[in-house]
Image (cartoon, rainbow, N blue to C red; front, side):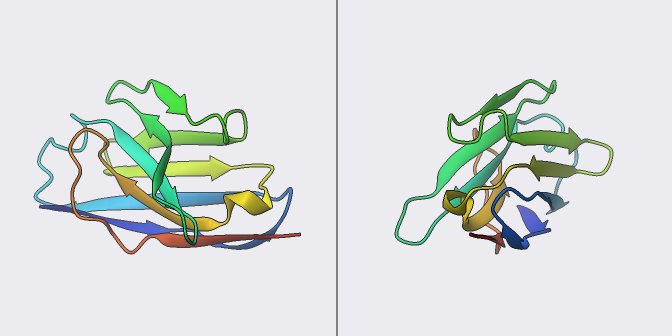
Length: 117
């Protein structure tokens, strides 16, 4: 079982930036590098949604709501993934999580991002 620990969240004003990181641990072997990794978020009262994913080869895809503002990256040598979030909006407020979109594992605690006006 692989676990993710997310970090880097916080309180930021609209228009600001944050960089989130997640660290995978557990029975990783080559599982991390062999799978796409995604960043998800869940806002209060809403379902969890996938906002960005990066394939094992580095190809990226973003939800329309974050396109051109968020950048996902990964470091297979460290089993980590990052999400650079720029020009943050109030509607980006949510708890952010990492997981494997095609092979979901247990969810971590996430990291809270709060964007204020």
